[in-house]
Length: 345
Image 1: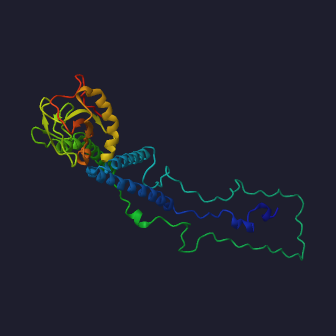
Image 2: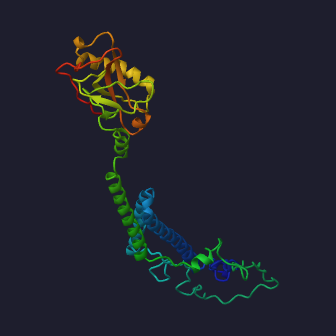
Image 3: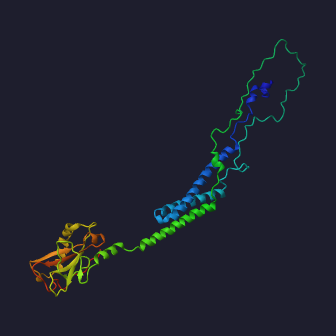
């Protein structure tokens, strides 16, 4: 059998057993480290943001952001610690046997365990070769060059930025936890402070209402201080009513408060708006509380409504009154069981 049949020195043998070109050992390591460093740096920046937002909780709007961002940072730190516990690491894979093993070059076909045995010798005498037959020339095949040219890298994609890998230092776990926890605690403290301030804040509406409505001279009343049943001298309706003089109901007077209702409008309704409400409410109150035997055709039904300043200060009471233009009374015009309660909102 010829050598070609045995596969020993075949021209094609040069194509067998040549190793493939693999990535250099550091290429995959640097890529993994680049990802881990970028993620850890983001976590560090988030921890600093939590600290700043928590300290600035006096602004109010930063409190919720600090708490949510702080929880996210703590979650990332926990994932980083869990990665170290389960064998994952922020550091590049090691070259130890436990790490990423590099692929081995392609091995040629295994060699024969025993040298090739020729056929046993025949008992016949050796024959003489034929004369005049020249040996046949064998074709020569070029061996492909799988080695990259000198100076050419074997990595088919660019390596991670060198400046990132060179300056890959990040905060330790303790510092990140300190920033995140301190920021969350500061945000919670500011949240409690804001809650206390809001709960204990004085009622500005009530204070303003008192300031507008209570500044009256002794023996006088105004639209805020007059009470159902009070008898008084009718003020002029030609101008804004600031105060009017109170009297005893047994003394001469020409006006009396007969009841109160509360206007439910959101904005100050103006004079026309009060008239529309008083036509219904004051008629109902008058029919219940006024003794018809004590009034005549000259008696008029009216109301005292808050001005815009009192309205904006929170005062909504409208006082229904009866008054006379041509006479006066020296007694109360109310029925004995008149309902003089002031309704509440």
